Amino acid sequence: MKVLVVDDEPLARERLMRLLESEDTVTQCFSAANGQEALTRMTTDPVDLVLLDIRMPGISGLEVSERMMEATQPPAIVFCTAYDDYALDAFRVQAVSYLLKPVKREDLNRVLRQAGQLNRAQLNALGDQDAGPVLTLQTGRGKERIPLTDLYYFRADQKYVTALCRQGERLCDLSLKQLEERWPDHLVRVHRNTLVPKQRLEKLSRDSEGGFWLRLRGLEESLPVSRRFARELKPLFEG
Image 1 (tube, rainbow, N blue to C red):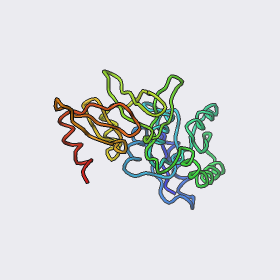
Image 2 (image 1 turned 135 degrees about the vertical axis):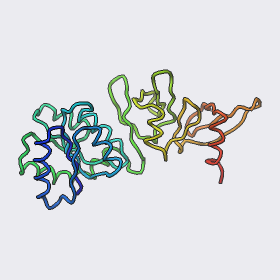
Image 3 (image 1 turned 90 degrees about the horizontal axis):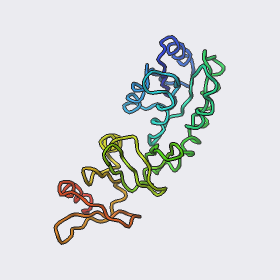
Image 4 (image 1 turned 60 degrees about the horizontal axis):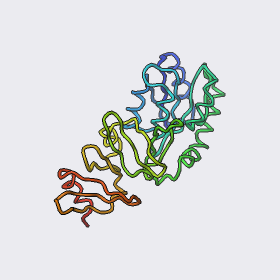
């Protein structure tokens, strides 16, 4: 099992690393001093389990966990905190468990066993593994996790990006550029303000005035396509 320790306190981070290095089930362990460093490491070298501090400067542990859970194969997450009132939040983002600081060896052994047993269940709880990435989108009731396969398109309008999905319209915290960079294999730009999941592409047509229009699977309306992106789209409809 590959484990990542995320904590802004050097002593707490080093203590956990020492405990992990003596565990037979742990094959590799890494550390990160903040949320951004942890997210960067996960993109280059994914792990099976993340031991995550909640209160950190910059990106909080709760936000880091939500972003990690958007991965196609998210890690098991265990929160490490001195405040047990975060327990409900831990399970809201589908963490496997949480540890109270200072972490005891017997408690660490317990969550390592849970991580191994529940990692598969955690993935299943997110939906079908073959469904691809999962996004966290804003609704009037809070945040909602929606598979990319439920999305029709993303549209930028001034300061906001709106996602149209089977559940209705949702607000997205990411820009179109960030969405493209995060899921380049799944999304394609059709207009300067519109991004579409590739699996939704159905038909590219041209009207009498020379304008391009895109029909999407499962959606009645057609989307306008700029000439520039029409050239890039055409190969996706060939063969």
